[in-house]
Length: 389
Image (cartoon, rainbow, N blue to C red; front, side, top):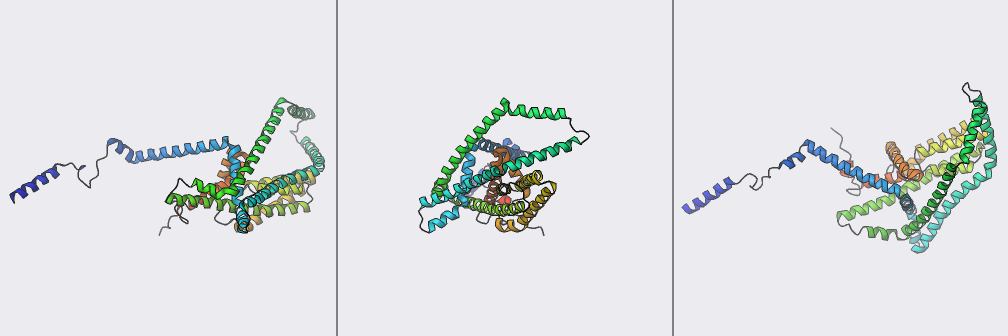
């Protein structure tokens, strides 16, 4: 009994001699470096460093995309076209058409649509160019006569000097270098168009196989999330483009009928231009209305231009309040501020095509956030808070 009591006392003395850090269940005391990063200021520094890293990575990605626009934009356009015409591919394959034949048919249809739209604009412009040019000269002469009546109007010598400056610029080497730059732009466009057709062919034919290969590094919850991201991307891009195309078609038909009734020249190419610019939210409709009003002003006078503006505003109001909510739906609706920011970033990085692609890319990003933690479960930071009692 005495031996057991001495052993118990020895164990008690040993446990009492242990430091608090060595006792089980007691966390070790933080070091000075850990204390420096764990207080409020240290946490702020950590968050600031994380924000700087994210901004640096974002800047690198944007710089790379702006540098490789000839490659990036055709790939994005191919992905958008493949997502848009995915239901057509499924419909053809469900009726026994082979993958290769269905891909060729869909690809030929897309190419015919693009070429037909470009040819339609060029043909209509060339057909009515002489009339529009003559009326433009008359309108320009009327503007000059009105300018001469102003108290601060330039005299004939200044007007002649300005005209000579324009002629000198058109015959200078600077204008020639601009023409060479235009030839380079045409070459880049042709290269991008060929790359678009090739990539679109493989996306249409082997899209699921390519996506399955890209999913190989994932497993478990990461694989489920990657599959949700892919399905959401295809569904969002397809729904966005098909809905926007429907809205743009209604805009183009309504405004085109108004231009024909008002006998505005270039009504057909202006209607096609309305359809194209409708893919740029907020800004596109405004630009299309301004161009149509300018043509009406030059060709038919101020009253006709005011009527054109009224037609454009009426069609846009009907489309925005009635048609767009039905075709686009709430799931693809973005805040106006988000759209403006996306348009600004897209225009700075990719020009006009960047502006066209910015909004669908932003819609895809928001769609991915909404399914990040589950099919109907957004990312934790994007979830709505319960209303306060």
